Length: 409
Image 1 (cartoon, rainbow, N blue to C red):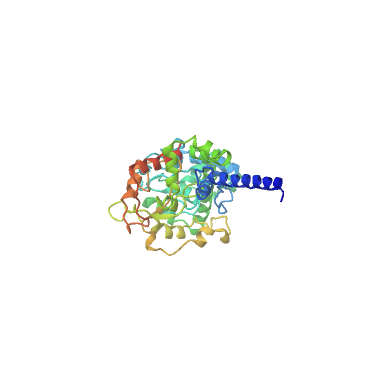
Image 2 (cartoon, rainbow, N blue to C red; image 1 turned 90 degrees about the vertical axis):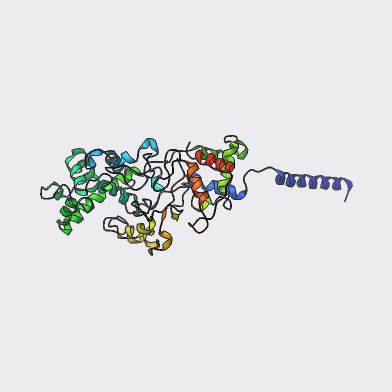
């Protein structure tokens, strides 16, 4: 080989080696695994949950009708409250209370409706398998709006605008709703008078009323599915990270918040990702984190009773008022139907988004601050719950909270 060729070869090898070394030495803030996890939190990864049991779920007319119903106080027993009384838009569609306040104080905390179109299983115990089935409950629940299904339908029938909206969507209201022979207070829930009136009706009439009442829930759910997830500082950070790189993105967050993100992603250290993952930062499953109430006046066994409740619900996906084909009811078809001991005290994992507006926390609103929530997890001992023991220093707690607050701003 000539001298010139040897020099050229040496230079080429040196450039190649320098390039490789340069790549290896280029600083990185996020590991490959961390970047993959961060990418999984992006809102553009979301897809709406199955709504096959509600064929009106994306119907604009149903959305408009459902929005009117959502804010209408006449649908409660005494005209004092609506769905929006507990799901207030300026509080991330919650109410700021430890337990919801309807006609009476309820036993559970109000869950946010932000991004509810992406959710599966409803209520803290998952006793409803669709948003429309859930929407029917507050109208009749004794501690919530305390009305009855017949009373709700009579109000719709007597309001000319509502009647037109209903019939344009679902067809004519049942004639028996206009009949004086049907008591205004009639339904399977409520006081003894309401229930007595209901069970005096023929099975055929009950089914006719139930179908019309199911339609009300489907309209309300159509509106609720339009309640979108607003972007947070964390979402803005992710967008910059995957477009402009980590150097530019990291300028937008404090060192404490960045350290908090690292902690959250550290599965061996914090275990957060066991339950809080995906764009909603919830796996939408049920877990025992030591918050069940098994004694006293506020008994709450969580999923333990939610399983039989959803299976027996006449408004579930497999029921006669569903618009789905049986094979489309994946949630019910594939859920674990045996009630195991692990379900006792298990509650649905809530989203971590908008935490600054959705306090107090947990199914019974027992904690008012994120610091208290972390102290609860730090106090858990092995074998008390399904969670492993957690250890955090005081600075690490502050860092983790700094991250969680990014999900609210």
